[in-house]
Image (cartoon, rainbow over all chains, first blue to last red):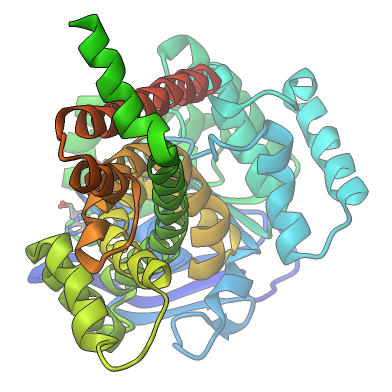
Length: 248
Length: 231
Ligand SMILES: Nc1ncnc2c1ncn2[C@@H]1O[C@H](COP(=O)(O)OP(=O)(O)OP(=O)(O)O)[C@@H](O)[C@H]1O
Ligand SMILES: [Mg+2]
């Protein structure tokens, strides 16, 4: 956590999202600061993914604003593609590009969008691959890798753009149990390097150990948030108590 | 019996070099199919792209309407009728090369079917691919061309080749505008020699051999593609 009081990296103001008549997010206001590791938990269907996907406008908010880097990215005039380059996203289903080699998966965005040379992009990709222990798989194709390996590559793919924040939507939910650990390990290292992260997860152990803040989403808004120790030891909201009773 | 066969063969193919009708006709059929497929590819790809942009973003309303109209009309009428309308009605008063007209007609016809093939190819790509592309900062257009289309194209290659086979056989109605393709070539021989059996069976056999070769080719490609997939 930062000592100097600077303006938040992401400032969410009255964020609303409706799907037709269904109000999923009912005016969420929350700040995410540089270096925060925010874990979002909540019951299935409560809108965790929707919240996360609104942050980079993969889902279009129906109300409110999101100030990122001092710019309201909900303003139709902002170039969202430019801002998305600074927000990495990791999906439950990995979503690697199956027709490209791992290396191509990692370099296509930096080379196309940030005018990186091939050498520069590949150099950085190799550096990151080394750190997740997959340097020797650079020339393979995604479907030749295990789920855990694919998800680590997906994290690296997002990191290759040198984002300011990483958004994770249940990154381990599609994995076989024995592969969950290797992915959480990579995320934990990221957190230790002070990457700003917003993580939707069902991994309470991870939230407890790695998060700087845990937030409980239910009924369209965050009902409680706290630093992890207090959050899990002394939940105040009844819905949260009930939820924790079920999942812990 | 055998002597009879030999005589018939000589009469229909050898005498007066009548086999030229088949050889030249075959060449016309192949050229026609080839260029019509290319034109259809261009049209089909463009239409699929326009309709996909419209479905996903709501833009290009007018173009999308034109595409739908085109698809409805072309797929709702026989190709022979389209061919004759283009030749006798649209180009009725201008002298235009028959082969070119036929390429245009069959290309426009095939485009409608190829558009549907591409469209289903694009739709077969999981949503997550578009989302992953957009989340990296690619525009909709960049994601389509760099990520979605290459995968869709690969998925539809076998179906597209089957469309080539269909088109190859469909061009046999080119004779309706007096274009001397393979079928017409056989028919001309028939009208000269007054024997139907030999020339028509020969024509049929040539189509059959070409189709069988193409089908082998499709199988081979399918196996290749599956091997690379490693799922
Ligand atoms: N594109 C959509 N159209 C209509 N309804 C949607 C759409 N996306 C999500 N919803 C609805 O919005 C609600 C919240 O969905 P969301 O995926 O954000 O929940 P979640 O908290 O991520 O759930 P889970 O833990 O199962 O992933 C759900 O009721 C869902 O059915
Ligand atoms: Mg979800």
